Each structure stands twice: as structure tokens, then as C-alpha cells.
Length: 71
Image (tube, rainbow, N blue to C red; front, top):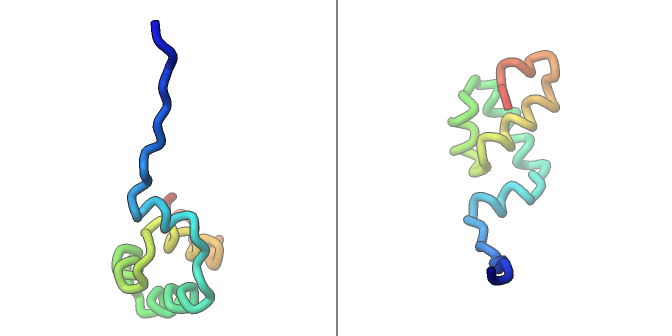
């Protein structure tokens, strides 16, 4: 039996975006769109961030409504 070889796989562009932090302007835009009201998917498309990042911002801002945005 040979030695196990490991190789690094390049992450897709979407995966690297999760590692970055949202700017204050992006958070403000998410909250503005939430007040309109817009769906999480619409907010995600408009701001240009993944849906889970939008859910995280909404969950942190409105902890009472955590069940509206399941993770």
C-alpha cells in the first residue's frame, strides 16, 4: 500500500466570500431592504452577499425573530 496523498482543492469564489466580513454599509443596506419588506433571497441578490450572511445579520439585529430566518 502506498502513502496517502493529499492535495489541496481550490475553493470556489462563493466559499471565499464567506470568510470576509460585511461592511457597515452592507449591513445598513440589508436592514434598509428588510424594512421594505424584502425576502432574504431578494436582499442577498441586491447587496451581493450570500443568503446565510444576510440571515446572520438579521438574526443578530432581531434576535426575537430568529425563527423567521432558519440557519
